[in-house]
Image 1 (cartoon, rainbow over the protein chains, first blue to last red):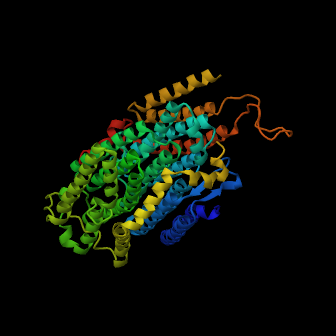
Image 2 (cartoon, one colour):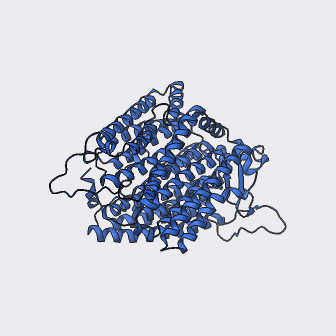
Image 3 (tube, each protein chain N blue to C red):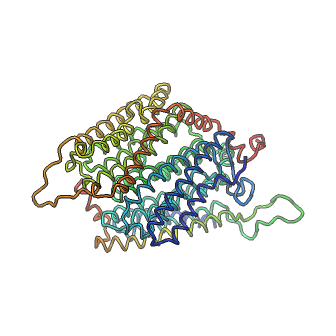
Length: 510
Length: 117
């Protein structure tokens, strides 16, 4: 089925960004327009999801050039679910930003860049063309560079150098891989590549190209040997920006990995073994890193790395059950990680520090808020029946059937360490009484209590909204699992995707 | 001609990575720049170097029969050049800002805030 409707989520973000650029200094108008446009895009996202769920894969050929010659946009259930969850996060972050981001940042174009970033994300999810994916990635990273450096404090600048250098390197590696892929097949359309790659006899070169793509996406999604830039840069920008980065930017790398390694490069034993080992290393190093950090946001950064391991584990096991688990985890992780950083922002607003030994007494001061935060933390840990628990069942099950015990041990350790660090954080920040101030230190005035009630609501509402989504993922797990299983089935049998893009004859020619 | 390109691309990638591994921020940037150019030339090389055969089909046939100069790699390179131009100009400004903030060109000096965990 063909429809121009599918690029609406990205067009709306672009239109909003352009409108906001004309309202450069008018902050109030920017806030209102941004939130309204995010609500509209969320509705479009829901409609797109319903449409793809009911009618199957929808395609759009840009400029009416028939595939594989033009750029194809494809919305299958995987893409549209990613767009949907991205839109939910976008709405939450944009509401939060209206208070959470200070005026100076807004005056330098926070909201337009925010929308350009989400345009890039939606584009990356919806495109069916490898080079077009590269272009969307570039739009995402250049917007993220601006968000990272906006405001320009010294620590932010220092971490931005690492972030910019690593992401530019990742782009070059991605481009190199595209060059080799084009040399091998003469095509850039993902569906067409899926057919053509299978026919190439030089499997060694195909594997190397696949691994080059893996390195390119791996840097972006922070897998084991390539993650070191993440914990040293994600704690510096303001919480709202860190929430976008933590919740979505690593996940777009994971999305690309899933797309490439289920559609184009079907993993052989060598690649699945490599993925399993990388997953084990990612889980363990991320977990160990989070134990030693005393800064709350740095700890969360390491937890991002740690939990990326669960998704790579799904690719490493490469069965339908494991993929469904990994996809479920991906959806859960987008919501929970975004929420985690939003929560950390509220704590920073209250206490003026993220350093856990200096925190304390939050539960005594804000019991209701603390309970909301507790639900977020428990969802992250995966205490049944909350959302982090269900995907792990699938991953463990697939691990036992595949006999991959090393991976199971690593996943258990990672889950346990997550529980440990969250419990430690809870006792440090919420239960213990606040430590006395050093004599030479100024007392920090609670920046949350002094806010107007409406501003407070704007900070707390997104957290509650994402918490409700998390709760739904947990209590309505069977619905999410049905979606995940459907996507996993489409990943194992890619012929519907290829037929939708290239037409029914494409598979019969060979 | 192909051999020359292969050597040139190898040299660009090699020097790019070497420069990235140095401690100076300016060298890091120059390294990234060279790597980007190497990748662009690689696309050009892998799209086959063909001279004097434009991708125009003669009126009496419906498909290409002879080898032709593929226009797609060139459009890809053009896009990549434009994108890397934007990224590089951003990176140069960022370097200057960081230099003004830290007073140093040394990447090892960038970890000041790592000390207080």
